[in-house]
Length: 164
Ligand code: S3P
Image (cartoon, rainbow, N blue to C red; front, side, top):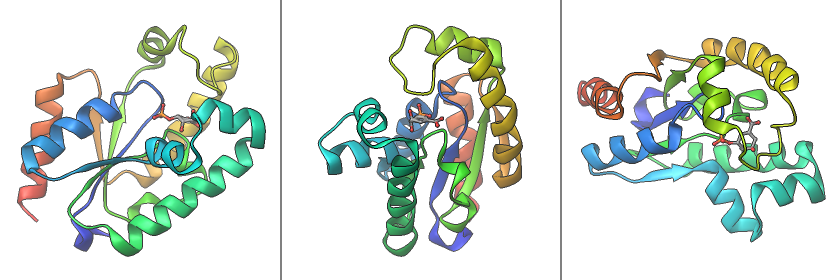
């Protein structure tokens, strides 16, 4: 939904969505919303705790509610979407979608040792990655190389959006 002027960042855990989101928002003088942070604030719990206590399906429902709120109410913002949002929502409905694409080996390096509910083992992450890249590619209006520098990526997004 290009008319909303929202920038939507999608991609696997560790692709750099949060960092890039902050930089784009700084360039645009807009704000960045992070779907994970919104859910954590609303629930008063960390994402990992929500997964443990209520399960993944419940978390996905919360993601859909947040996306629907954004679709109805948010304009001119940068949205950093949790890596699995694409499973239950088409993010093209809330803005211009930029996919930060990072190779699996780099993802492993970046997220290894972190407490992430879906990081159970390398084989499982590899299978999830394969499944997800199809969804990311389908929803992406633009695909960006997540290995480029933060300023490079952020400026590319900023320049594109200025054309709107
Ligand atoms: C998830 C990614 C996480 C978070 C949750 C589930 C996923 O967000 O929403 O742990 O399913 O890929 P980030 O991509 O911001 O790490």
